[in-house]
Length: 225
Image (tube, rainbow, N blue to C red; front, side, top):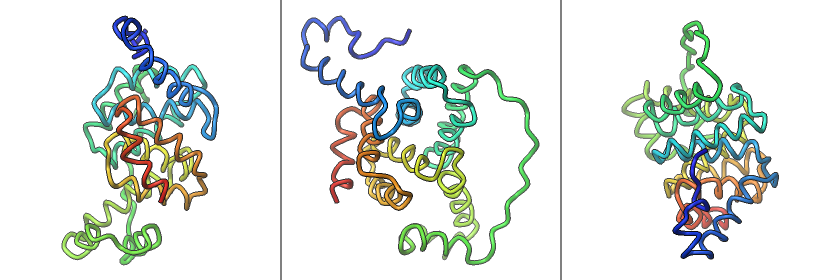
């Protein structure tokens, strides 16, 4: 069994406040609340992979499988990591999924999805309210890259196997654990997808096992706003 913070003999002996406080964060994560406990295992796992904490991620995926998370649901984390943290993080997550669910069967190659002229820009304007400066630069100078970003963004949110709202939660847990200012965008995106502030708060807390309390401190101001 993976060792957890509250299993540390040194912390048990010298730091009862630390153990007790962390146990309460774990209580939020491991019980049904605004977000169900099974889904929260995925939120912790993707944040852990993003931070290079593979052992933590594996333990959460195993716990999720015991709670009933299917491979079809768990792949939502793979999709989000592919977009937000790149190829290496995504392949690490896929390897962990294979340990939990067994090797995936081979699948046919994906036929390229076409992007109509102006489709990416319209999507950016609809989602962000206006085209953010980095994406406008991409539209102007590397339009094929803008199409690529659009398709991967759609995969992470609009076509997420769980739901657009849960896609936003996965993004939030990663961004919170990384102390990223991009959290603001996905707090707004989660609200637009129908999430409550209580759900968003729990998604942020799921970044704490990998990122510490700093994950909350970095992300909570965007929730307050």
